[in-house]
Image (cartoon, protein in one colour):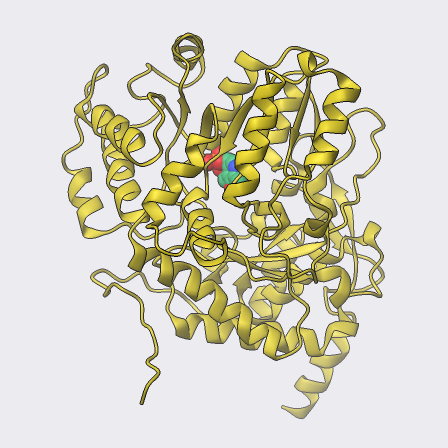
Length: 478
Ligand SMILES: *Cc1c(COP(=O)(O)O)cnc(C)c1O
């Protein structure tokens, strides 16, 4: 034997039972949830792949750290631990803690954006763009074209197209571009990384035009792993070294600790410039809490400080991304259309390719996520037309090139067996894909509509067109 399987680099100390429901219960649950997986009760879910946000399992060290929470209103020692961890691993001198990532995005957008400004970035993220738009900016996507092609095997689909970026800056004027909003990895492109070389070039260009670069560092550790694996000359560096190097090419970062940092809640804004940090510290008091807790308990900051350290360990990150790849490979082998290459935190099903009979106005990805839930109790999420929302100027639906269902893998929570069950269910739904019905809105919220929207199937009683008939046959047989 020369090859050896890999296994999760942890063993289980505490278990949380999960419940398998039957199909009739799931049909009712999804109807009650308006065919929106965000509105399901988690008790009705068997394997929860809705998101990797705040769903990680904490380590015994993190739980021990929770007991060391210093719940002082001001100057908690846990703040100083967190500040040290962010300085050591991300390199930002000034740390402003926030309740989660969007808290940091809100403060950053308020201090940097003036109404009428333009922000460019490598594809958008929902909450990030929402805060940029609320502050009066227009967002422009300057990601490479390959990012919009689910079949392209480009190793760094998160790269910025520098020609597009420079044309945009010339068009709107550098003085109206306060910063570039650069994500590592790009969630909406399928968890795809940006290369170190590209970020370096972006940073040099931006600085030559007096524009700042703000990193969305939410999954920068996962990005660092891809750089180590795929970028020339990076193979011998540690993930921690690469992470630090990535961040060096930015003026600051917004962070959701709920992803890479293995905690259930928490985020931060990191900045290099003292004057800017002073402004941010002043605003955080208004919206989040004092600048040494920013909406977090002391124990939350401690868990995040320890989580940062654990997140860059090679064994951890290898198995985390390896598990996502394991699921993705199973689906590819079965011929299910997925975004390639497989990303860092999730496998993305290409819903437009799987359900060509469902028009984009009937939300194929929303429908596919509902069908998958009915089939097995696996909860996924839509990342397509519903998530894209409407254009703030015209009010028209934004129809993105990518219409995806995201199977997001929480960190250190599920085993390979859960991945097997998930793959089997996706393959089953894929085989009966012609029967999946489209959806239409019955309720559409104004902001970030994907979270709370409700739908009904178009021209069918359930999400599977002939579900009623199929059940009648089953009942007759019984
Ligand atoms: C989750 C996420 C955010 C927002 O963070 P929250 O902690 O959910 O507020 C921002 N950017 C990216 C890429 C994310 O995945």
